[in-house]
Length: 194
Image (tube, rainbow, N blue to C red; front, side, top):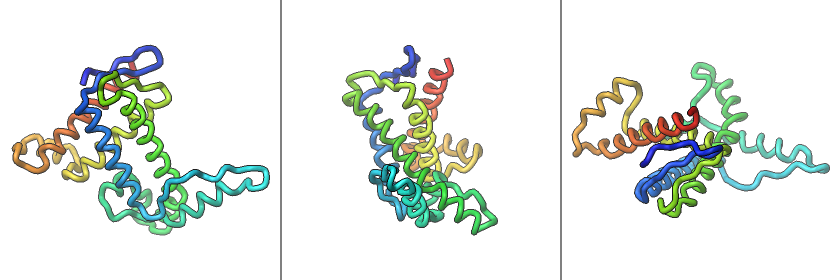
Protein backbone atom coordinates (compact mmCIF):
# COMPACT_ATOMS: atom_id res chain seq x y z
CA UNK A 1 0.00 0.00 0.00
CA UNK A 2 1.15 3.47 -0.80
CA UNK A 3 0.28 5.76 2.13
CA UNK A 4 -2.92 7.78 2.14
CA UNK A 5 -2.60 11.33 0.85
CA UNK A 6 -5.02 14.21 0.95
CA UNK A 7 -6.11 15.54 -2.43
CA UNK A 8 -8.56 18.37 -1.92
CA UNK A 9 -11.51 17.01 0.03
CA UNK A 10 -10.61 13.41 -0.76
CA UNK A 11 -8.17 10.94 0.73
CA UNK A 12 -6.40 8.72 -1.81
CA UNK A 13 -4.22 5.62 -1.53
CA UNK A 14 -3.04 2.92 -3.90
CA UNK A 15 -3.93 -0.57 -2.73
CA UNK A 16 -2.86 -3.80 -4.38
CA UNK A 17 -5.41 -6.35 -5.50
CA UNK A 18 -4.46 -8.48 -2.49
CA UNK A 19 -5.02 -5.57 -0.09
CA UNK A 20 -8.41 -4.75 -1.58
CA UNK A 21 -9.39 -8.41 -1.35
CA UNK A 22 -8.15 -8.64 2.24
CA UNK A 23 -10.05 -5.61 3.52
CA UNK A 24 -13.16 -6.62 1.57
CA UNK A 25 -13.03 -10.12 3.03
CA UNK A 26 -12.57 -8.80 6.57
CA UNK A 27 -15.52 -6.44 6.09
CA UNK A 28 -17.70 -9.27 4.81
CA UNK A 29 -16.71 -11.40 7.80
CA UNK A 30 -17.56 -8.55 10.16
CA UNK A 31 -20.94 -8.12 8.45
CA UNK A 32 -21.53 -11.83 9.01
CA UNK A 33 -20.56 -11.53 12.65
CA UNK A 34 -22.91 -8.59 13.21
CA UNK A 35 -25.71 -10.46 11.43
CA UNK A 36 -25.39 -13.29 13.99
CA UNK A 37 -26.76 -11.02 16.69
CA UNK A 38 -30.33 -12.26 17.36
CA UNK A 39 -33.00 -9.76 16.46
CA UNK A 40 -30.86 -8.13 13.80
CA UNK A 41 -32.44 -8.15 10.41
CA UNK A 42 -31.24 -5.53 8.00
CA UNK A 43 -34.08 -3.95 6.13
CA UNK A 44 -35.48 -0.59 5.22
CA UNK A 45 -36.59 1.41 8.22
CA UNK A 46 -40.16 2.64 8.05
CA UNK A 47 -40.30 6.24 6.97
CA UNK A 48 -42.31 8.41 9.31
CA UNK A 49 -45.14 10.22 7.58
CA UNK A 50 -48.07 12.39 8.53
CA UNK A 51 -50.24 9.40 9.47
CA UNK A 52 -47.50 7.19 11.02
CA UNK A 53 -45.19 9.60 12.82
CA UNK A 54 -44.31 6.98 15.44
CA UNK A 55 -43.47 4.16 13.00
CA UNK A 56 -39.70 4.63 13.17
CA UNK A 57 -39.73 4.99 16.95
CA UNK A 58 -41.88 1.87 17.30
CA UNK A 59 -39.52 -0.12 15.05
CA UNK A 60 -36.52 0.98 17.12
CA UNK A 61 -38.22 -0.07 20.36
CA UNK A 62 -39.21 -3.43 18.90
CA UNK A 63 -35.67 -4.07 17.66
CA UNK A 64 -34.31 -3.05 21.06
CA UNK A 65 -36.43 -5.66 22.83
CA UNK A 66 -34.07 -8.29 21.40
CA UNK A 67 -30.91 -6.57 22.64
CA UNK A 68 -28.69 -8.80 24.73
CA UNK A 69 -25.09 -9.17 25.83
CA UNK A 70 -23.57 -11.33 23.06
CA UNK A 71 -21.80 -14.58 23.95
CA UNK A 72 -19.14 -14.04 21.28
CA UNK A 73 -16.14 -12.20 22.76
CA UNK A 74 -15.63 -10.18 19.55
CA UNK A 75 -19.24 -9.01 19.62
CA UNK A 76 -18.85 -8.11 23.29
CA UNK A 77 -15.93 -5.92 22.27
CA UNK A 78 -17.88 -4.34 19.41
CA UNK A 79 -20.99 -3.85 21.57
CA UNK A 80 -19.57 -3.40 25.08
CA UNK A 81 -21.64 -3.65 28.21
CA UNK A 82 -22.03 -0.15 29.64
CA UNK A 83 -22.97 -1.19 33.17
CA UNK A 84 -21.03 -4.18 34.46
CA UNK A 85 -22.54 -4.14 37.94
CA UNK A 86 -26.15 -3.22 37.14
CA UNK A 87 -27.93 -5.79 34.98
CA UNK A 88 -31.14 -3.76 34.66
CA UNK A 89 -29.31 -0.60 33.57
CA UNK A 90 -27.12 -2.62 31.18
CA UNK A 91 -30.17 -4.25 29.59
CA UNK A 92 -31.90 -0.88 29.18
CA UNK A 93 -28.74 0.62 27.66
CA UNK A 94 -28.49 -2.27 25.17
CA UNK A 95 -32.20 -2.01 24.38
CA UNK A 96 -31.90 1.66 23.52
CA UNK A 97 -28.52 1.64 21.74
CA UNK A 98 -27.80 -1.78 20.21
CA UNK A 99 -30.15 -1.56 17.20
CA UNK A 100 -28.76 1.86 16.32
CA UNK A 101 -25.13 0.72 16.80
CA UNK A 102 -25.69 -2.39 14.65
CA UNK A 103 -27.24 -0.28 11.90
CA UNK A 104 -24.40 2.24 12.10
CA UNK A 105 -21.72 -0.46 11.87
CA UNK A 106 -23.54 -2.04 8.93
CA UNK A 107 -23.73 1.30 7.09
CA UNK A 108 -20.05 2.03 7.77
CA UNK A 109 -19.05 -1.36 6.38
CA UNK A 110 -21.21 -0.70 3.34
CA UNK A 111 -19.43 2.60 2.66
CA UNK A 112 -16.01 0.96 2.94
CA UNK A 113 -17.02 -1.90 0.66
CA UNK A 114 -18.40 0.55 -1.92
CA UNK A 115 -15.10 2.46 -1.94
CA UNK A 116 -13.15 -0.78 -2.31
CA UNK A 117 -15.38 -1.96 -5.14
CA UNK A 118 -14.75 1.32 -6.97
CA UNK A 119 -11.03 0.44 -7.15
CA UNK A 120 -11.89 -2.50 -9.43
CA UNK A 121 -9.65 -4.88 -7.47
CA UNK A 122 -6.89 -2.30 -7.06
CA UNK A 123 -6.71 -1.18 -10.68
CA UNK A 124 -7.72 2.34 -9.61
CA UNK A 125 -6.63 4.29 -6.55
CA UNK A 126 -8.79 4.03 -3.47
CA UNK A 127 -10.61 7.34 -3.16
CA UNK A 128 -12.32 8.15 0.12
CA UNK A 129 -14.71 11.09 0.02
CA UNK A 130 -14.92 13.33 3.07
CA UNK A 131 -18.26 11.82 4.09
CA UNK A 132 -16.74 8.29 4.14
CA UNK A 133 -13.65 9.05 6.24
CA UNK A 134 -15.48 8.45 9.52
CA UNK A 135 -16.80 5.11 8.22
CA UNK A 136 -13.27 4.06 7.28
CA UNK A 137 -11.78 5.03 10.63
CA UNK A 138 -14.51 3.26 12.60
CA UNK A 139 -14.45 0.18 10.38
CA UNK A 140 -10.68 -0.18 10.67
CA UNK A 141 -11.05 0.13 14.46
CA UNK A 142 -13.80 -2.52 14.52
CA UNK A 143 -11.74 -4.89 12.36
CA UNK A 144 -8.74 -4.44 14.64
CA UNK A 145 -10.86 -5.03 17.76
CA UNK A 146 -12.38 -8.23 16.34
CA UNK A 147 -8.97 -9.60 15.34
CA UNK A 148 -7.43 -8.59 18.67
CA UNK A 149 -10.07 -10.61 20.53
CA UNK A 150 -9.52 -13.65 18.31
CA UNK A 151 -5.74 -13.70 18.84
CA UNK A 152 -5.77 -12.77 22.52
CA UNK A 153 -4.66 -9.14 22.56
CA UNK A 154 -6.04 -7.68 25.76
CA UNK A 155 -3.41 -5.07 26.61
CA UNK A 156 0.00 -3.75 25.54
CA UNK A 157 1.81 -6.69 27.19
CA UNK A 158 -0.18 -9.33 25.31
CA UNK A 159 0.37 -7.42 22.06
CA UNK A 160 4.14 -7.31 22.70
CA UNK A 161 4.16 -11.05 23.40
CA UNK A 162 2.66 -11.71 19.95
CA UNK A 163 5.57 -9.90 18.32
CA UNK A 164 7.78 -12.83 19.36
CA UNK A 165 5.67 -15.71 18.03
CA UNK A 166 7.01 -17.90 15.25
CA UNK A 167 5.65 -18.10 11.72
CA UNK A 168 4.21 -21.55 12.44
CA UNK A 169 1.99 -20.18 15.23
CA UNK A 170 -1.65 -20.03 14.01
CA UNK A 171 -1.86 -16.46 15.33
CA UNK A 172 1.03 -15.27 13.12
CA UNK A 173 -1.02 -14.38 10.05
CA UNK A 174 -3.91 -12.73 11.93
CA UNK A 175 -1.35 -10.77 13.93
CA UNK A 176 0.33 -9.62 10.70
CA UNK A 177 -3.09 -8.49 9.41
CA UNK A 178 -3.77 -6.72 12.72
CA UNK A 179 -0.42 -4.90 12.47
CA UNK A 180 -1.08 -3.96 8.83
CA UNK A 181 -4.51 -2.58 9.77
CA UNK A 182 -2.83 -0.49 12.49
CA UNK A 183 -0.43 0.98 9.94
CA UNK A 184 -3.24 1.55 7.45
CA UNK A 185 -5.29 3.39 10.05
CA UNK A 186 -2.29 5.48 11.14
CA UNK A 187 -1.67 6.46 7.51
CA UNK A 188 -5.32 7.45 7.09
CA UNK A 189 -5.27 9.52 10.30
CA UNK A 190 -2.11 11.31 9.18
CA UNK A 191 -3.70 12.15 5.83
CA UNK A 192 -6.92 13.37 7.44
CA UNK A 193 -5.10 15.60 9.93
CA UNK A 194 -2.55 16.94 7.42
